[in-house]
Length: 275
Image (cartoon, rainbow, N blue to C red; front, side):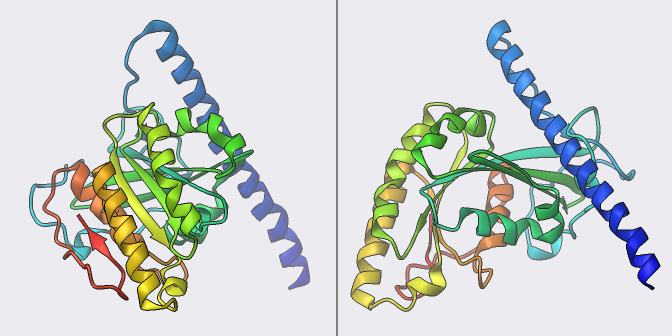
């Protein structure tokens, strides 16, 4: 048994290293495409995830999107390159907000352990991916988490360009992080005018313990900021998986013009959804 474990450890390390190298190669290729796009003036083309298993391409039909329409994670596809013709469509998602507000925890909760192991961490930038089957179509989320330090502002352009959605996040228990969201939104819009904006309050489980008058004040301010940004507002908790999957379901429905079925919730003391 001990000899078998000794043999398995190098194999696991090898595959983890190969996954990191593949992710880094895709990132370098993405940077090169951006350089070429800026130098030639030509719009960048959409990239697609490579096919790991064969399946027919069926675009999401314009019917109601339900939880049962979302298939399990195709972890095999996550190891493939974001290159070439295939039946996988990549949606780039950008995460912006101050430090220590739970962006990375939110992302890890969504992508799961497999996605976390295949993440690429750079100075001030964290990349993860997840692949789903939605109404017969294979959708790959490429999630770019920008560090909240002002020294990381240089990553905002590359994180926001070509993004399908930009998630502006704040800590529900920290009023100063809520005050920062307009600044993050303005930074994002300098580089992307068309992405779907979503305003997300994190750590709802801690927020629910605050006095109701404080909750009411934060809810009112967050709703006002969401209206100013023309964004959908969600309160979430990575710890208890509150509205995490629902946010990505909303992005998918919005991007593919599918009906949105989740009900609006404006009750103070409950996880707010406002749109």
